[in-house]
Length: 167
Image 1 (cartoon, rainbow, N blue to C red):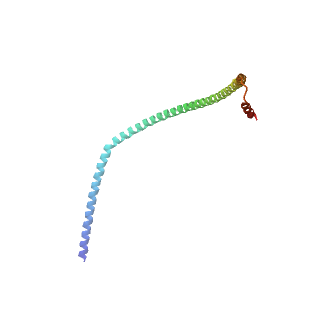
Image 2 (image 1 turned 45 degrees about the horizontal axis):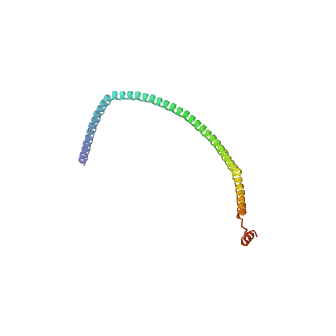
Image 3 (image 1 turned 90 degrees about the vertical axis):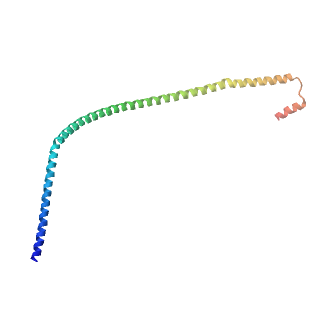
């Protein structure tokens, strides 16, 4: 049995040695990859530094432009606000004036209507009433002449009918 144990130990030691050799090879490969990566990073480092410098300059320039645009926008907003205040006061003034003019127009229209009504009443009283009176007088005169010019005495039937009319 000692032989069996010894054989098992030899096999496990061989497996362990192979694993250590594989690990060593992998460490060597990792080391070479790190060296290659270091060379690539070292070659790229000046480009990255140049890019960082350019980026800083661009950011500074953008900040200045943003500050200018913000200042101009604030100026435009202030100007617009002032103009809106002027427009608002102008509209308020125009609306007040229009209201006053409409009130005046209403007063003038009311006065004109009152005067027209007075004129119609005056025409009615001054012309129409005397015309009616003249027409009544003319009708009376006509009836008188018709009666007088008739010349014939009225018959009994006609007189009776005239009297019945008043009864």
